[in-house]
Structure formats: structure tokens, C-alpha cells
Length: 178
Image (cartoon, rainbow, N blue to C red):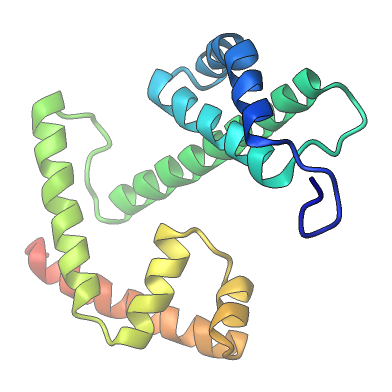
């Protein structure tokens, strides 16, 4: 059945068959690449969602196409993880916080408390700034995409983000007693 682009789409029943045929092998492949079974399961779902949504339009066989999509999705996840870890380390260094990893339960409690404080601080921002912060941080959209989606100039998006970050930094500095 053609999709909105006029290309052939894989039928849902066919995607289910492909899942039964390749999911075990692909999950093992993804777990090896990502070193995390939960992430591997998420990427696996993403691969078959793409197969359902976009269909198979590649010239190679379907198995190769699925594994290529799996690899690309896994690399995207790894890039996001690296960017987040780098950002956290940079933030910790800028605040003079030790990069040493605390006990697991302590780490989870501290992380949750910090997340709650950041969410409260974001909620206190003007709505125009909240929207941009959420689109940039949570949705990981580029500023140009945010500007396009909100139908505002790029400079406006950048100004709002800068103002929001300054307010968040001030608010969080107060919360953390700095």
C-alpha cells in the first residue's frame, strides 16, 4: 500500500512477521552496541516503528535495511548519552562539584531532588521561555527548528533561551545555597 509519499509501505502484518523473524538477533546486536538491555529494547521498538511508518524503500534486502536502521538509531542514542554526560560533567565542574560517583541509592535520591528543583525552576519561567527550554532540552530540537515551529525569528528564540538560562541559573543557585 503506498504511503503519503507514494512509496510502498510494509503492511502491519508483515512488520509483525519481521519482528518475529529478526527481533531476537537484533536485540542481541543492539544490547552489544549499547551495553544496556533496556535501551536496546527501546531502540528495537523504534526500528520496527520506522519500518511500519516509513516502509522499506531501500534497494537491499529487508534484514539488511532493518539492521542498518538499528545501527543508526543506536548511534543516535549513544550520541545523546555522550552529549548529556558531557553536559553534566561540565556543569559539575563549573559549580565546583566533585565528579566522583556517590553511592547508588544516594545518587538516585540526589538526582531525583535535582530534577525536581530544575522542573520547579522551569515552571516559574514565563511561558514563552518555558516552551523554548522544553523544546530544546526535552525534545532535543535545534534552535532553528524551534524558531520554525513557533513561527518566530531565530534571534527571538535565542534571546528567550538565554534569558531563561540566566533565570534558571539564578534560581538554582539560590536552591543550592550558592
